[in-house]
Image (cartoon, rainbow, N blue to C red; front, top):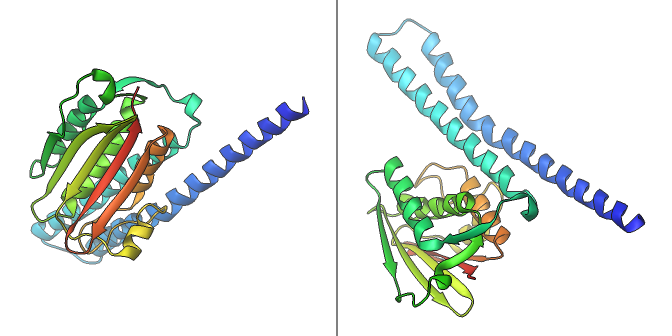
Length: 240
């Protein structure tokens, strides 16, 4: 009974810590876009303006609102990824199908992006590309990685290479963009850190969420990058 009670307390503590971190992330990340939205509206009300100026102010406010919605979606997904593995539905899923779904989602949101899917070798059996996982969370992770490639490359392209080796299914997602310094790589997967804002807007939550999802599936996520030479993310997941 004592062992069971201690285990219960440990689970409760972990749950409270996750909620505390989530609330902290929400308050920290919402402050900046909300301040920008408020400032835009305050500025519009300072004096009488032309119809064109009001339209511009409304457009800027709408853009800030959309950023807030995207941020909230990211934070909610981050909270979902903090669940215990037994609380998440897992089933057999094919990685090639998930990548095709992720590609479609990205292209719907960003028609100017380019995504190349390449099989390094022909799969002799379906099991080398099949894993036990949650299709929603994995698709979210792949969308984040693909968008990261496209955002930071001048040709807006992500090259996705699918392979397998021993017990691993391996996905390499590469771009030939701005790359990262060693310091950027160290901070990339830390909570609320991200790639340099001068190149693209973002809140950094996507990469934290992606890492959580990959670890939840007993996988590995690594990054190789050099300044002005591009970045490659490598995802390794155990196939069935």
